[in-house]
Image 1 (spheres, each protein chain N blue to C red):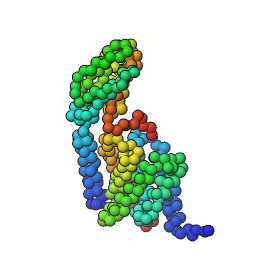
Image 2: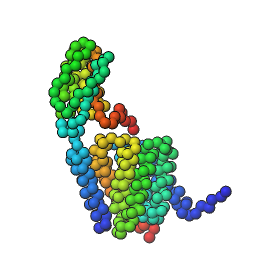
Image 3: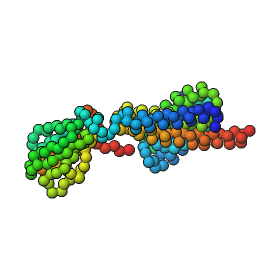
Image 4: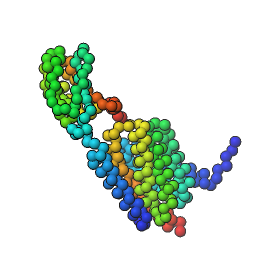
Length: 128
Length: 168
């Protein structure tokens, strides 16, 4: 390895190290932090009714009247999830937290659906 | 119409054929991450750069991408353009790097691999998949590029050293 090689490898190591700091160190914002949840909203749709949006920047609980009864949604740290629904299988609750744009959960028996909205719609799936 | 085949044309064709063979073999290796490959075909580019200079290396590299794409069935697919953008970026980098005195195949290998990954990533990010999440993958991809560029450079230097000794 020549002296010039050493310089190149050293500079490359420094560049890669800097990339880790830049990309993972928070300058791009974290995925699920309360701070950048400002402005992020979720749309709640009840079958047959126009949807309404809820602000994910404000923690709290929302109750939605569906066909069978009330579904409860919990908003926390810029995320939203079903916590209760009168359905049998509880698929909506098992869907867990919805944090990213395009994340979606629905309670079909109760006719309630929640989707996280954002400025640009991401991809549903990627295949290589 | 007849073309005159110069000695250099024949040499480029042979070396490109070698690079394409390695490229196709390597395309069939499983990879944990899309875009990460050992880049063994670039060892040929590095060796050619050492022996015949930048012009021949550029020909071999571009012919490898086009030929490899045709043989692998990925010609004009997104993967092909990723490959092409990487090759063009690494050639631009090598062109600049030849101005640095005292570099061996190791230095060239590292620079070419980083540029290759950067070029490929730039196309992926701006055209194919503009999602901020992709940026989080960049350090990992660049680490892989650094490791494989370095090891490829070591292979190329050892190969070049052996051949030079055999001819001397």
